[in-house]
Image 1 (cartoon, rainbow, N blue to C red):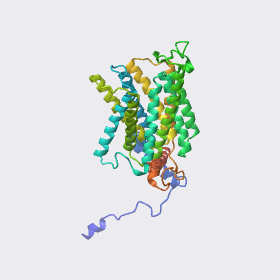
Image 2 (image 1 turned 180 degrees about the horizontal axis):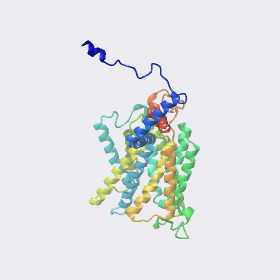
Image 3 (image 1 turned 30 degrees about the horizontal axis):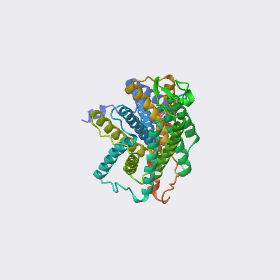
Image 4 (image 1 turned 30 degrees about the vertical axis):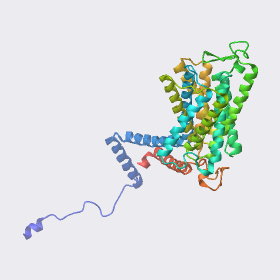
Length: 446
């Protein structure tokens, strides 16, 4: 055992006790070379790493784009509601126009009464089912405003229907579209709302687009040389004649139409003043109730007969008018509660676009080049106003002239979603910083 142990070769260390390197190979350069080689080897072994980085960058960009779209949608939900309300309003006008060609003819006041009666019943049923308090009279703090909204609304709809009896459709349309501009000015003066120069320019361009589509006789002339005796206008290559009227009747119709514009301006401004102090149904019920009362009284004074429907087609169209009118008022009220008067009423110009489309579909009228140009101008102006809106800063708090300015419920209609907009802006800034850092320095982020 001893001999075997002595014959074993002793261990000799082959590595020197001290580390020696050549003077021409620095340690830092060697480490960088080794790390670069390892990275190159890993990229060679994993050919999908570039695709993974591209997918990561695309995912970050898509998330940033989604947040921007969400913020834009939230900031312009009121504009979208008003735009959709104009779609229902245009569809309602189609049935009104078709109903005028069905015998027996329906008077103006009866049409208002039936339409508003259907709207009133829909609102009351909804509020009773959802247990909304004060469904008929509305909240105590805004009842006078609700009455004023109903008076202005009836004035607007009566003036419009009256002017259509003596003016061409295009002339009445151009005059009615003065209401959005007047509402923007009234909101800035009465409610102290912001009315920027860009909104004024967009409103002016939208009015130009309406004129190009409607082409009123007092600007473009008519088919006849004597426009006073046989006023007519070509709308989308289709001649629409108006019954013979005297100059005095035409002048009176223009004056009543201007009163209608003032009524619509008062109605829109009152809705903005009410804000979210009242449920949207309260505003619509006040409007419908007073329209039914005033129209019934007018029918009794003028002794116009109430036509009872005898045909199924008559009943269907009248019901459609009521349903579309109800949808129009609800969406319009909800939209104006969320937007300032200047920006909100800009979306009303979209109605002329829906009217042109319905004219093409239901009456087979081909739009003219001027109509197409006017449509493009209106859409461009509306999109510009929608995209140019910036979230309000915290130091700019708009007060209301109604009630106590310190009451948060009064300001809710003007300052809705303020905290949500600030949160979205903070998240968007964070994602933007992270995305730029990961794209500019991919190796560092890896």
